[in-house]
Length: 165
Image (cartoon, rainbow, N blue to C red; front, side, top):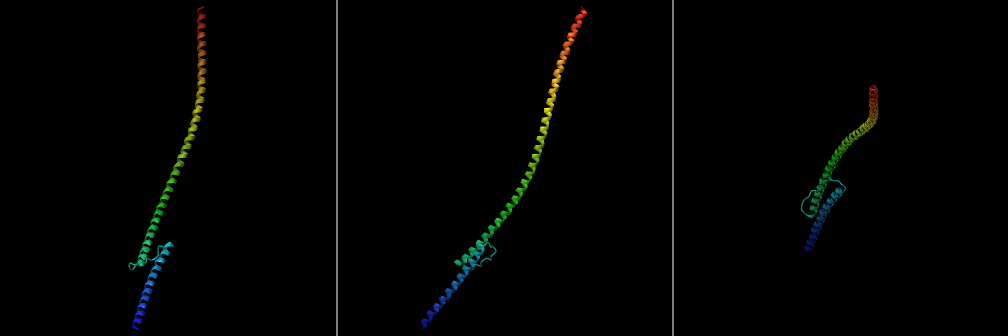
């Protein structure tokens, strides 16, 4: 009977030990599972798992804490990069606006130069036409002068000849 009591006690202790271990293991796995579910839902504010021990369940808790830290770092880095990109985009927008303004000024200047060049071309064309008229007048004047000189010579020669007679 004593042997039977000993066997029952050993069986009870074994069952209690198994239940205790199972409860601890299941509770640890549930904690890690809840944390991973929150992390997968983008909740990086979840509390860290308090790790006690070095068994596999404790290692899962430690790794989930490391995962959370890594994800927080990645999100922080992405936010920093997004802010820098936003600042760069704003700077580029300002530079594009400045370039656009400068190009508008250049375009206006080119239009003014084109207009003035057209006016100068018209003035030169007009002046060339007037110069051509003056050349014609000068040519006619030369012709008239030549005729006058010829007539004067003829008159001079005619007049000289009459006087000698």
